[in-house]
Image (cartoon, rainbow, N blue to C red; front, side):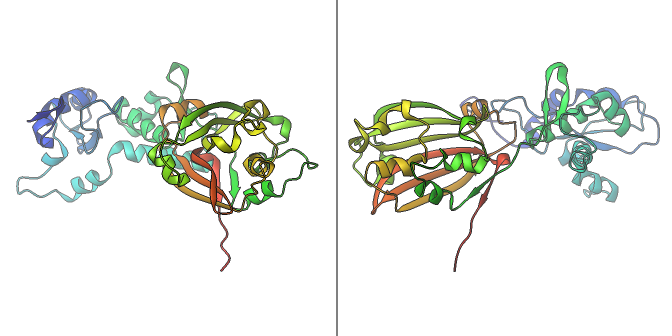
Amino acid sequence: MNVSAGVPTGSFTDRLPSLREARCPVAHRRAAVGPPGRRPFLVPGPPLPSPDDHFLHKDLLCIRRLGQTQARNVKGVGDNASEDGNLSEEEDAVTERPAYLRVADDLRAGIRAGTYLPGSRLPSLRTLADEYDVSEIVIRAAFAVLRNEGLVTTQERARTVVRARPPVRRIAVDRYRREFQHAATDEPATSFTADRGIPWEQYRLDKTFRETQASPELAALFEIEPGTMLLERRFVFYADDEPQQMSLTYMPLDLVSGTPVADPANEPWPGGTPAQLASLRHPLSRVEESVKARMPTPEEAETLHIAPGVPVFSITRRMLSDGQVLEVAADIVIPADQAILDYAIDL
């Protein structure tokens, strides 16, 4: 086995014995006490506690035999073959769907069918282990699958609870047109409040402004020289005191310096950025957006209260007036389980 930069490398089988002992202790203990006549089935190791763990976290399964009073051996998947080198029909079927995934499938179906309602507790490890005749380590692995899918959370005293489904916000492609058409005499609103369907009184922003130089990436988006001074604006959007969205936006400093737009005390601004540009005599003429999905950073997950396993929409936006880029949102972050992006294309 080779080691590079402190990270073990090499083949899966090079590390299998130590992994087997470290990852499946329960399988070893229970294999010796099962009732006679049972066929072997697969028991996975538990999910890893962090990405920094160098153990393999995929395709590692331990095999336990419950039909013997002594555990004769515990094999990795690569060893689960008959003497002629072929998997038996029964073993092949089991290999395709390990026990923890079958348990996760049943629990997931129960959550979606309403058997387990949002806020309710899943059965205990012991109860499920007895029901499926598996070890608790299998149930823990099944819970981890559901947690990584954003379906459950683990609360105090190790309770596993079905996660409440957040309200879904529909984000329409014409939302900027509403801001562009917003008049000073209209009720205060932005595209965010319209999407959420909340009054102005339930909307607030955390904001931080500072001056900074354009990085090469920002310069390319603005089509300006690197080092050009910009006003950076960081926002966290709240609806009824619940954090919903984050954004990191930039505007040319020579455009906004000394204007009300550069004063964070004027946020939130009715009509949003389109209204701000209009106040600067640069009415919005074009909006460009690029949308991708990714997993949140630790800061984003903490700030927006994002459950494990839930991805985010990451939106890069440019706002233009007569062909000139006057605002760049380098990153608008929205939890993907709280939004649907609606698009309509006229042909």
